[in-house]
Length: 179
Image 1 (cartoon, one colour):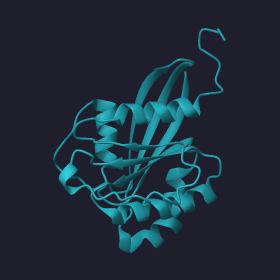
Image 2 (tube, rainbow, N blue to C red):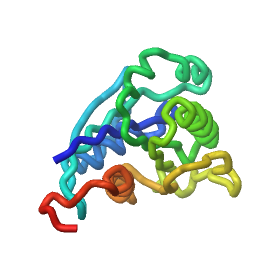
Image 3 (cartoon, rainbow, N blue to C red):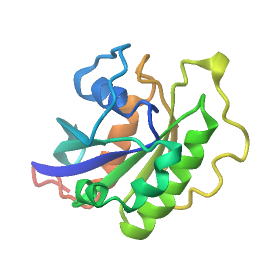
């Protein structure tokens, strides 16, 4: 079995912790608890080419007023050390979080070139409040894929993590030795 570190990045209160909890534990909690620093959890998944242990780092979100601080923060750099892939999360009900995600993505791709990134537009269950507009996803060059997710309903949560895990393990030989 191999280990892969996945980092959850994005703005403040976009649902990173809820997405991790939904994927790892299959639960959703209505209570909002701010992540200070980082929360780490793991889940072992079986892929076509073997078993992988995902070590998921839920990294504190960026507040729009603090985004410049976030991007140069030495603590942030320490949390991202050894990242194999990233899930960049934005809240589809708050357009400002898409701009934060865009800025984090631009910084991340310079600092960690070649590390696969998928974009998640979270909170799709809040249809009446959804504010994603055509063209708002421009400027996310090199993204593996964009997913619409809901930590509440579980929509596309597992699919997103598995998609990134597969991208991280495409060159690994099957565990049983077959080709």
